Length: 381
Image 1 (cartoon, helix red, strand yellow):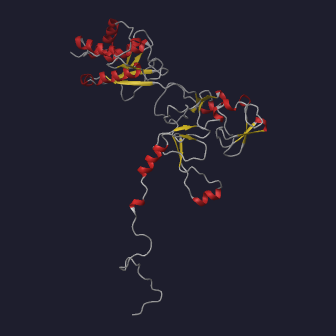
Image 2 (tube, rainbow, N blue to C red; image 1 turned 180 degrees about the vertical axis):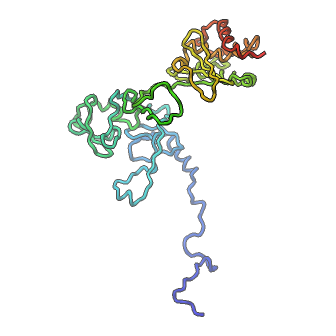
Image 3 (cartoon, helix red, strand yellow; image 1 turned 90 degrees about the vertical axis):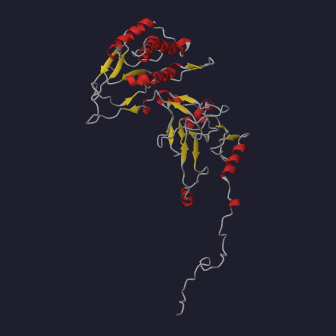
């Protein structure tokens, strides 16, 4: 049998012959170690300062460094997959480099770094490009004597508002250039509370609402307000016996009013003082509390299938208000199991954790009488 002229020979490694081409094995000694690269980069940036202008490689995300904002954001806030962008669309299509960015707007800064500037632009809001909606930044240019500014992303010229206008110097820079952080820094924070453009929109009404409200639905934009918090306490018999209620009250007390350790060191409260709080207790029913009157009223909702809020405007209060403190003490101390010496020991521990500035001013006896009236239907013998 004759072989054909177009016969394909077997590969040399399958025919029992030594492979004469490239190395068949990988030399592990020549493979770069990521651990060595990470450690070398960390040691290199311990004594250097990273300048955000182009020209130097950014530190690795595993390195601690000090950055100086020169008009570009620090790598702590923005990291991209490649630090060298293609200058033309043809080059971008030929190289096929995937471009991605990772943003971390609330990254922790080194104590030696300058904090992020906070800019309040009022009701008009920050200046933005009329075409691509890019924010004004240090790389925008000014034209027509400062009447318009040219976007560095889309090259569109946007008119400058009258309250933001400023004359230019001989270098075509604004005279207030150094007083405008948004024209010098790559990372800034804008306060847009007064600008309706940034307000959230009320959801449109639906045909089948999942709930019923006696108020008509709100339309349009809604102004920003502080968030209200609701603390729900399980006041069932099992919760009290297990100590769950006491632990929950102690945790909320530390959040609202701070605490002192055994060495006398006071840890301040970290709850925002401008927010309001409401307390809801539950066992077999729901209990809401009306704190608008001098005597706290407990509103019981027994229907758990069709839950409703009996009152809306009188259940929220500031944590520093004395009425709220009275209500909190009632929830923490009024259960009938806290009687006699057990109640007194719990009250002593409860009150000792508060700083002197937050001691309750409500007399002890009226507090206990009011608590007894609220919980008289749940007396456990």
